[in-house]
Amino acid sequence: MDHNETTRDGDDLFLNSLAAELTRAAYTVLLHQSERGSWIMLELGLWRTLAETVKAWVRKAPSEEMRDEFAVWRASLLLALTDSAFFVAVKHRIHNPSLLSLYSAFRPVLYRSLRRGDIWNGAVTPG
Image (cartoon, rainbow, N blue to C red; front, side, top):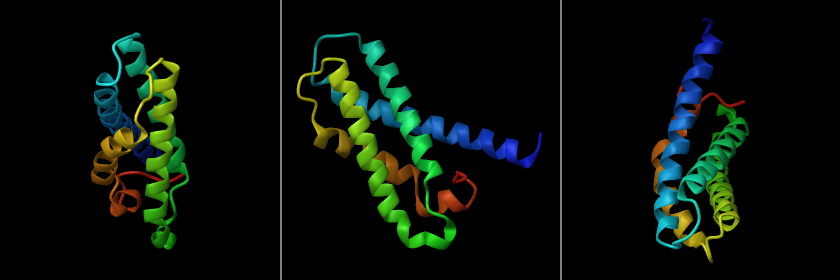
């Protein structure tokens, strides 16, 4: 196994773990907002969508030379995750899902998991 393969495996593990944490946060918020529908399908839908969103945005992460852009990138990722989870909730017939509640649930997970150094110190490799 070469270094790039090892890095990709580590990236996948980190990104899948992050997607799972984000899914748990969104699922907890949405559980309190509806009584109907398939909760298993909602959870799977959230995980798939949030994992895709995280992976797409990590490829867009600023290079180390553009460190000043990191805060803007992370805030934009937070908004994209909130938007993605909202649309999954609507698709699963959750009436009036709260954007603010989703945003508030995602923010500590994202900010704890994606610190500035994670991107450039080997925790995640930008595309």
